[in-house]
Image (cartoon, rainbow, N blue to C red; front, side):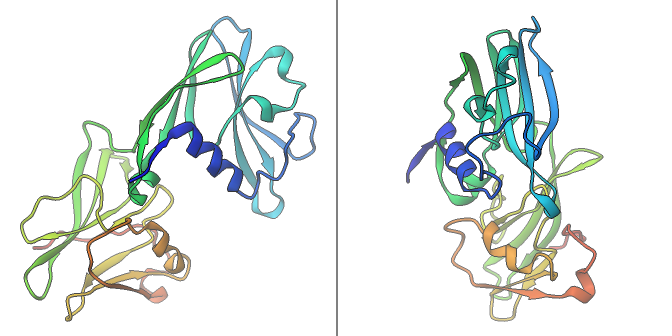
Length: 252
């Protein structure tokens, strides 16, 4: 298994997205958009979260620039953390903290090492977040034994508080086995669950239900090396047209 250093991954991903079309970005550009800013404790430096106008599709987030006040007229790309870093904030005048979403790496079966970096003379302390807080409660949306009695299909999510439903995890485990922290078959993201229901077919394969908006995207959220059980996705727009979450009653 390959091991990746987080700042390197983020740079590669950043270079692949459609709005990374410009090698230079200036605040005076017509397509420049400022989302937020944070001054350092001594007010001599600035965290500038910005993006670029993508036209009809809205604004694309480009990242957060770590700037001295004299840098605000320069090419922001030179001082920018990749957009895969989030929750960037000042710790002191010489240090900021940044979070990195590790769920895509977990989904892809890639190991990773968190490594601090330096941008514009400022140390960036890098740590991970996976949306599952230490006090999160696991709730099971669906649990069903396969027709042959050997496996269980379990769809579950974590609740950080009463108003924060995290994305769905789907695992296939041996009957009465332990549920893994993350789905071993499918892990969704904060935008949608993509699979909106699921069950066993009579031949012990899986059936997932989705809608016209998400059916084609299910494949991208399958866990690498998931259990060797076949699946199919049924586009049921009549039943799931307005849904984006898998919700249901627990069953055994």
